Image 1 (cartoon, rainbow, N blue to C red):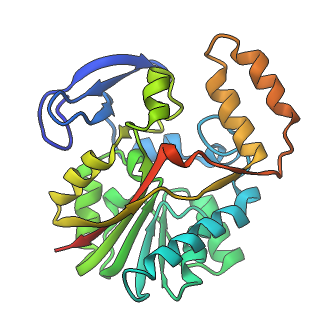
Image 2: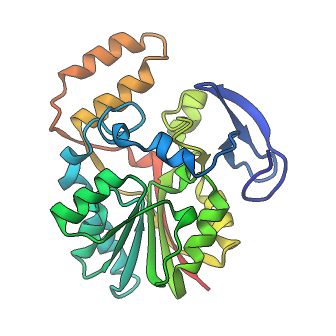
Length: 282
């Protein structure tokens, strides 16, 4: 397969969960060698993604306040760079991030492929959430901001998704993107056992440099970046770690110890594994 960033041939470097992870020798982007279509979304992000743990959530709705607070922090970051306006939140789920950003004066629309959580956001939170994948979205409104919080590694067609996002961004508008950093010290230490090598859910693995190079091709330049202060609850943390540890030596005994942590405990997510970038359109 060719690299989705620089179009050079990629090379297989290791296998994970039956899928080959490739790396581009030219730009060092990593991706999963998997041909995907729109059916990938319904297959991977069904209702169980939000309730059954593993690579997804053990109980997405139980983290409502933590996720809303995460959106609230991004609202504060955005206020340093622009006045509030209209936002499209991609991968909105039930709209908790959108709700948090909205507390800083933003209004807008969520886009979520899972109809069940989208309906929860509409009926229980009063959010405007459209059902669908960004690759196939044909909205007519142009937004001041398109946010993609922990969603860009999941796009089944990366370039098609960003082309759609570009059309949905007004000139002078912004993208806010949060994702994992494949070049973090933790990722380097863990190697192929790094927790974000989770195909077929996660398909792309960025660094700040490869993401900046990609969005530049769509007319966006970086104006700010940082590491997010993010928290997840104990139930989610246990589910993720147990899913990752089970394939490692001594992983099962370590996973059993995690059951001692309360499910409702707010646990800081390791920020060194994450980064966010704010990018301006032309």
